[in-house]
Length: 242
Ligand code: BJW
Ligand code: ZN
Image 1: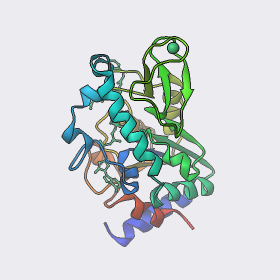
Image 2: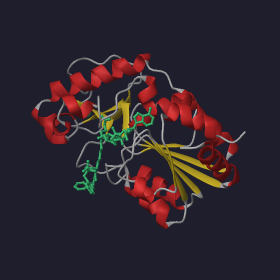
Image 3: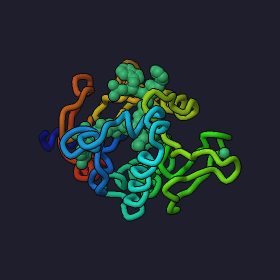
């Protein structure tokens, strides 16, 4: 990556009428939140199908809740990093802006991003597996075995696990924002999880310029127009137009 690459990214963003951003776990890495894949990633130590699937939850809900409660506690201490804040600034400078995130941590909203769509739900809401009630339990310490006050069934985190459909409203909005983008930023995602990764190819087909920000190559690198290699907390603040 050269100084020219950063200047080019800044210029594309300054000229764009519509910018859409897709973020993944890497954008929160500098806030101390582990990514899923790669060295030090969560899936190195635990099997994704045990912790992030409805089959795994049915088999051992206590184990799944122990993991989510630990992550909720860790997030209480976590703060947005310069990458999150740079995206807040970008939103203020671009006429039409949308931020699509796969993250469940709500750190984009904590930083001040407004036009955010959550593809994989969020970790703060809980949903009843019996009566379907949705409740916001932001910042609340949950019991080890959370159950519904109304029907007594197990509660689950309101996130999207493997094999589950994405929330239809969120997905529709994500597709719309992707199709309208002049510039599509792909930040801190391995681009291995579908259908989220498919948005990158949709943006490409719709004619957007695609910029990837990631320390590593990803499954989508071959289709991007510009790859900026480095941590998003360092790169993003350098490409937001003045
Ligand atoms: C940095 C950095 C720094 C480090 N700065 N960067 C089509 C093809 C193949 C498979 C499928 C397909 N369609 C569906 C599937 C199956 C499946 C899937 O994609 N599997 C693949 C893994 C093979 N998809 C699904 O099941 C989805 N549902 C679905 O398709 O429904 C329709 C359907 C239903 C029934 C039958 C068939 C179809 C649902 C996917 C749900 C994903 N859920 C999780 C857990 C969420 C809850 C939680 O957090 O607890 O979502 S899994 C996990 O992966 C999480 C993430 O949002 C998601 C994406 O990961 P992400 O964000 O990309 O993170 P990493 O760790 O992969 O990458 C981090 C990156 O950061 C790396 O590149 C680093 O280099 C970088 N990085 N430091 C910037 N400082
Ligand atoms: Zn209930």
